[in-house]
Length: 269
Image (tube, rainbow, N blue to C red; front, side, top):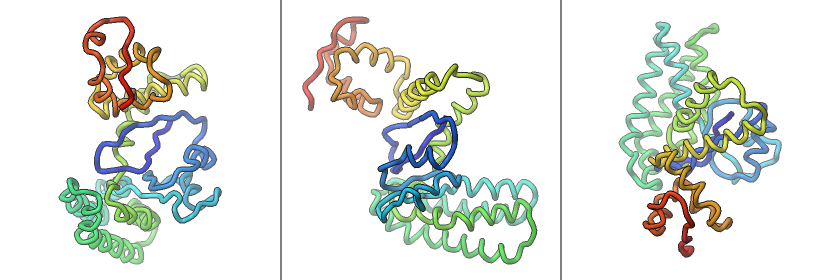
């Protein structure tokens, strides 16, 4: 079961998507994102490299991979708790980047991008200059050199958050949504078949998207099942969680109060 991040904005994303795959490979990722163009923020798993470096062949306006500063921070945290000074200094530097960026969170994307160039980019430049210097000084294989190596190898992707004011520093929203599935999976053990797993992924998508938009998943799914027989198939997006509040407000309240019965579909507006 996997969660994928697409182009991300500073405002809540419209959907959370879970999709079942039987393997975690470049072929699966390439198929899932075929035709997608824009920024894709993810961890540093090599399976995503196929999107940016091919195959398939992608042009300049294809997929641009964006790094996750939370993943970078995690390596320095592991070094810090094992008493490596490099880990602690790395954490301080990354915290300064997050603090500077948090002050820009409410700005429109274009202005946020300009202010990032002024206030955040210098901190990121200093961070990678420090990483390059320490990599030369430190030898061997340990948690400190591992943290420095990750940051260095992901430098281009981590810097790419500066390319668009809509991009957050990390993809922790996707990680938090996926965590519930990972924790639950230890108890569920089996889905029965791949078909059942695909159906479960669809249900998880609906529930997580409801939570994203502060909807009661049980109430939403109960009403959705009631509306589907009467709703035009070409207007299905009006029933999606991110549009549900606006759609429901246009319905006849007397019909909504009934536990069963037909629903009058409002005009497409």
